[in-house]
Image (cartoon, rainbow, N blue to C red):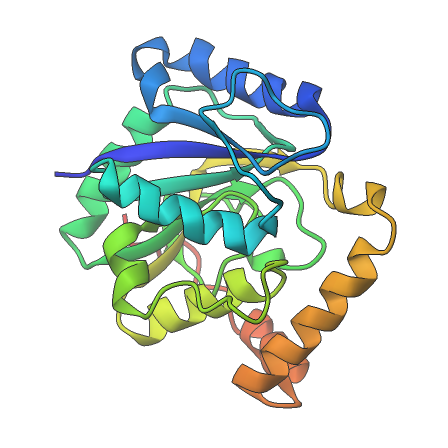
Length: 246
């Protein structure tokens, strides 16, 4: 049985977190207990948060921490949402994603699934395509992935000890999931908008520090030509028209 929770990672503007939190509650009030806000020791605390960390673990550290908590709470899947996303498709969301995952699992194990993005300047293959189905992609970014707790554990966890900031960790995770035989998918039937680097740009020096950590992290795992490798994956991502897994 699939049991999904949504986790909104709070850091930066409480208004952004409140907007998404309220939207999910209004769209699916009967699932309010499954929408959890994790306050990442933000300078401006989010009062209704489910839990507040005692230190900023950054994206990857917070994600790893929450995955362990979700498993203990009996959830099989986690929808890990940046607080600066905006869902453009109508709800309900958790119920819809659970049903989607249940159908997809009949065709093969799903490791990660992401709603499509209205625009993504870094990973164009995650932008919405016509058809409304789910399509395989080589990798996902960490804007709002739905991941199987079992799948992440099966590939050895997030593998983020040397890069808590998270840039590159999301890509590396989905690459490992796909290589291990788990489906990695974009759901074109659910659309979202993302305000890139909303919080990161507000913290002096963060982008530069995170970029250096990503470079070292990706070189260690994919070699010095890792950027060229990622470009090749992006160039070869597009499936023939209508080819979806659902």
